[in-house]
Structure formats: structure tokens, C-alpha cells
Length: 186
Image (cartoon, rainbow, N blue to C red; front, side, top):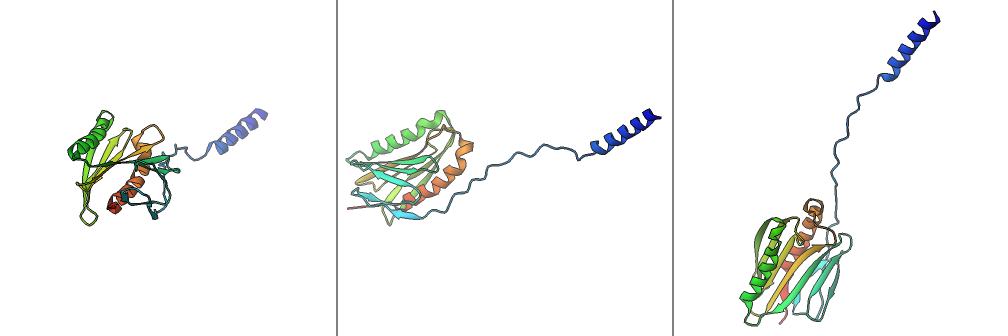
């Protein structure tokens, strides 16, 4: 009789404690990165160009008027190179595009968006490089007479396009603002 009570109580206990909800694996989470809206500052320097840049970035310009715009929170920078046009516009265009198309080894694709601002006399292109390339965004701007600038975005991390895509999109908006507001000093 003791055995019967023991087995019955064991069976009841097993039944009570084994009836739990089914366990399902949790779905994969997606990283949700949110960046603040940009407010823009006006670049003041002795260089022959000026533009607006994000207040979230720090900026430095050297004696050649090469500018570095650094985003500390994103660990990214926009490197801008200035070159005066001295009967070498075609050479400058070819050099700029060569730098862009050097990324074809790692790039999945390269698209070009033309840009023109007649009011500021700035004309150029924005290049988007998809894939694990070192520089996902590049551009050039010129007035076709005196001034030519090129720029490239770099991250302080190994290129993994999927991981840095939200940061690329954020910086692309700032890069477009730079291109839209660039004007030449006489």
C-alpha cells in the first residue's frame, strides 16, 4: 500500500510540475540605431570654399585647405581635399573617379548621383559604394574654372556594410548638406 501511495504521489507531482508552456526560441533582435537630428554650423576658414557641417562633428583644416570632419560618436570622418584648377580639370576628374573605382574589388556596386547648384556654381557627383569597401561615400565638386574638391567618408572600423549602413545613411544626409551649401569665395 505504501508503494501504491508513493507511485501515485510521484505521478501526480510529475504531472503537476511537467505541465509548463512550450519553450520557443526568441526571435532574432534587430539593432535599432537612432541618431539625433543634425543642426548645422557654417565653416569659417581662409580656404576658398565654405559650407555647412553638422554640429555633432569636429572639424579641422590644414594649410592646403584639406578639411577633416570627424564624427566621434560614429567613429567616422569625411576627408575633403581641395585642389585649384590649373588647366587640369580633366585630370582632376579622372583622379577623383579613379579613387572611387579603386573600390570595385570589394564593392558590390557603385552608383553615381549627379549634382548641380547653379546659384553657388557647384557641379559634381556623389558616389555610393555598396559592399565592404573602405569608403562607402565619395564626392567631387567644382566650379569648372578655379576650384575642385573631392571628399570621401571613412570609418574607424573594418568595413562591414550591413553593420555600418545606418551610420552611412546618417552621414550621407550631412554629406548632401555639405554639397548643397558649398560656395566659392572669390
